Length: 166
Ligand SMILES: O=C([O-])CC(=O)C(=O)O
Image 1 (spheres, helix red, strand yellow):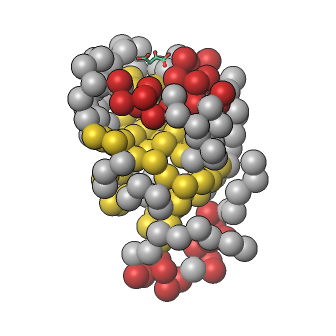
Image 2 (cartoon, rainbow, N blue to C red):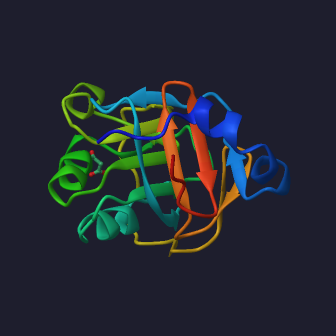
């Protein structure tokens, strides 16, 4: 799916950038998956080294949404792998942004879903089911709210309070 270019968004939205209605995530996310650019309404989930809630959300209809996972930046295991990315694709999610790690990178890279994460880690996460869905999260130096919009491309990742149009 084509998406508004993040540089264009920045050039044409100076005042929402200063008001905080638009937030640019800090650079440093690695890019995985076939989709270089993706956007959509956000679903949030906050977990720590446990991906049961991530799976629960990805088992629901994505309808073009992007799952933003605040994994607390943990570099000790992966919250998303090839199976969950396949699931996301088949359920119609457009992207997954992880404040944490992924694994099965070669499998993820075959999927159409756009994936951003801090890095890769071979260890799977715990399966206790701890965490919270649809809560405010803090990812890439910005607060992100369930239902806000996200725009990601090769230049960066932007979160907007409202859907943006050209
Ligand atoms: O199931 C997990 O914990 C993550 C994973 O490896 C996958 O999505 O394939």
